[in-house]
Image 1: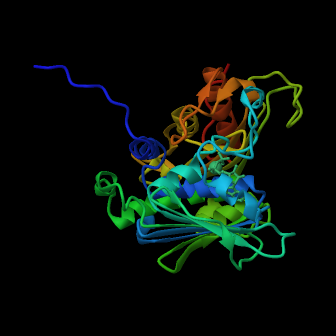
Image 2 (image 1 turned 45 degrees about the vertical axis):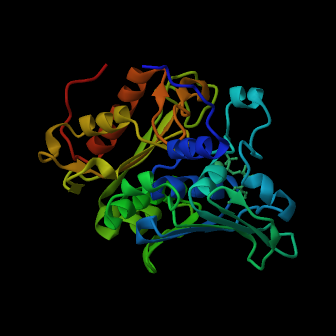
Image 3 (image 1 turned 180 degrees about the horizontal axis):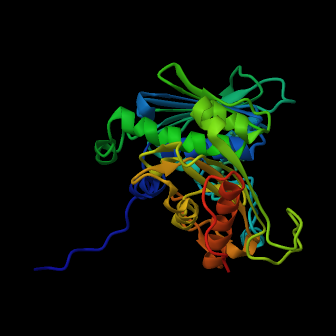
Length: 354
Ligand code: ADP
Ligand code: MG
């Protein structure tokens, strides 16, 4: 057999393949858009989706906005306002995004509209992208802030469209993502709507318990107990402390307030929403034998570690993290949750640890 020719793929094909790496399903689009709103300093983020997000996604915020002459750059490849060069990256990024590829890739596989008005601007403007074709920015009336609309996700990538699950399943994923950000940002009013019906809306008053109430309801909120842990001999939030874990705070539920999945164990590292099996396992471990078989508690736990000790950028789509000091993190989280449960007499004291 003749060896086949090796040919360079055309730009469009490259674009679609790359898009598939970032945008897997509606929830991944929602994640990117909500992160952009939070990075824009929004105090309100309203998410609404149609048919689990497969037919429409809209995220509206009251953040800094995008000036008309920047709209084209916002949807362009590798264009970001968040970092300038590799040194910025090495210093550590404070924003949730920095790759400058989310709007570009979403625009490659959907019909995307970005409408925005910086609060001080007199008029707003919008730009549309359809399957990678970028239109021209033009004036559009809109409130201060940014609204991003994504319609017909994957309409031009049938292979990807085929892998979408039932509407209810896609919405579950969207709900998990929006809940994750709502709990991480109790000072931001986050709301979620599905097919015109409100799923939840947090007040944005800065109180975590109030956010939990909005998202999970009264029964859960009332069963939550406070977690507050710092390494021995340090003050809370003391940045000079060189302990591998500086602080563990948040809320965990009474051992009898449980669900049949681990989906309600929300964990955050340095303010970022992450899924780390280390953190989940340590939390469960702390409950000892108090959980019924195959039952899992609710938890909203914030872990603070030195910025250099955690890699949060393993993959753009995934929420995984890697810790330099994994065993220390595990121990701190377990001790934090155990301490809270012990204080409330919800578990029996075990042999002294250490
Ligand atoms: P990144 O977030 O990695 O910078 P994106 O493609 O998500 O890349 O966004 C590109 C740029 O568009 C951002 O850097 C920001 O300047 C602007 N932008 C996107 N969404 C918003 C928003 N909701 N409010 C203000 N600016 C935004
Ligand atoms: Mg972004």
